[in-house]
Length: 255
Image (cartoon, rainbow, N blue to C red):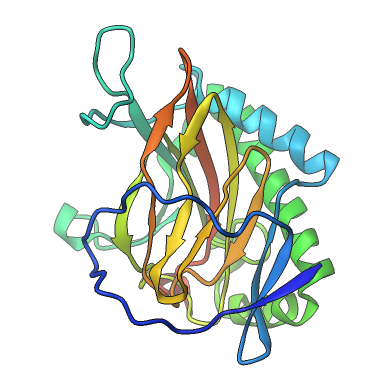
């Protein structure tokens, strides 16, 4: 697997800016390094087991069996009624949210929905498969992240290296940084898509736009840099892009 050294660039992008459509310039399997140290990697294709699990999770998410938080925006992704259909589902641990009168951590309510059990099981198995890929490609990161999660009680963990998971269906994102994540840890983004373009991850600090093709896996420290997701444009009826994400929250350290 080739190495790509990340070099800091000057730019005018700010947190909150919209991410425009940008052609990916990272399209091959690679390890990202910064000052010679591996910080993440990209693979265009998951393992066969990973593909099977991602397909099950993706299929289940798109049914009524899995609860969702739905959004409707005018970004070109319209359903049969002319409205945009975008939604997300969080599983695993949910941090305290005092502004919502919930000053304590919880496990996602989706876990209490019986019809969502296949989705949750597939996502947990996919998480474990992803951890195995991290162990094989970045063994030092795997061991370091396991140590970071030692401060988190097992009941709050999702797999061994993460606390939570979110699935984002047809959701682009303005530039942001995942400041709530554990510093020193990595996220996993697995992409499922059909008949669509866009939905790629842009990191302006390095001038990198990563091709999130179907069944690809991106492992990256999302706390490190601001990043955005390019607009998602269907190329045929029913076209979509779904990201299956695993991440570790620092609010569960010592909890």
